[in-house]
Image 1 (cartoon, one colour):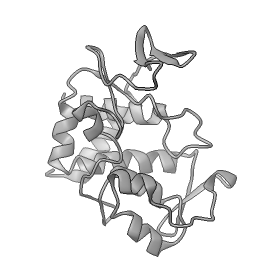
Image 2: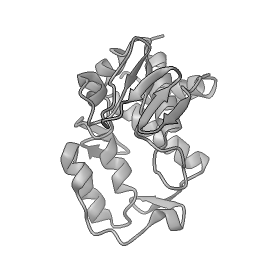
Image 3: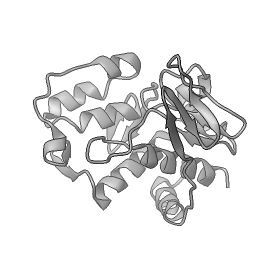
Image 4: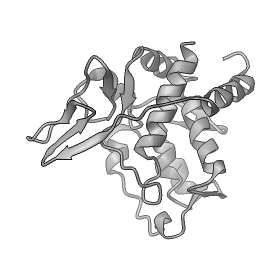
Length: 204
């Protein structure tokens, strides 16, 4: 990317004006529907994609949906730190210890999902997360900018960028993410807004 800082500012301006119609969720027993499409079937499996949308998650059988999950391994630099996945950063900020954060940034995939570094700090109690000593208030503009820069940094990896563009005009959703920002470091709405706007920005 020739001028990363300028491109990032251009994307932030694009995202600020971006309009998104979130697919509406409906739960009927063990089944989950988005608009009129069934996402989760009664036996507990999620449907990966339709002609209108693609469901992103590491457990997805759809290769592209899995490849765009935050756990999927992509090496990229974020704030002068080498990261192994987007999810490695999001897990690292739930810890205060810098040496643990260094370790977590090397994780991805199933290892990232299962790793437990004995974290006694519960960020939900304080609404505070940490990036190498810098405090981040979960529901704040600073944290929003942190998330936006994280995903934008990932497109420095051409594989991630190409996979994002491969979704074309399909709505990118994640049916596993929760909606309460006071309990989750990344909500469904944050993920879907960033992913869809970033794809559309790159494709314009």
